[in-house]
Length: 179
Image 1 (spheres, rainbow, N blue to C red):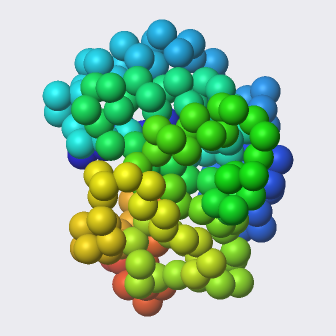
Image 2: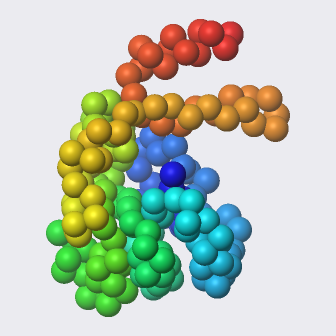
């Protein structure tokens, strides 16, 4: 069980991104760090960690770094997704980028590439995306043991939204059952 924080704002605009609603830095709902800290405190005894994704978390590195640090102080593991690559982040001169990396246990890097789908490894959508184990909190065997799955949401207008990763044949079979 994890708490997910979706950051708002992404200048990358990856083709095929399923989270286009997070691109506009003026969109979403503004939440103060204190509110997020309180939400983490409310659930920290029930969850293993915090997952930070977006948008692009490193476009808000100061606030996100503080959130990641707070989560780790509560004993939670932190997984951060980014469309950037680790090597770029390591040479970035922004001290908050370094702080966010310091308080990330598992970094999943690389932009989503619609033409390079990944269906075998969990958590990633394209084959270029990489896992960087930045602490001893998680290990490859633990993460790779997760199974890909799909998430289905019935929206208020009655339409069906599908998110997740996995085999397209499986998804088509599941969708046939809905029709």
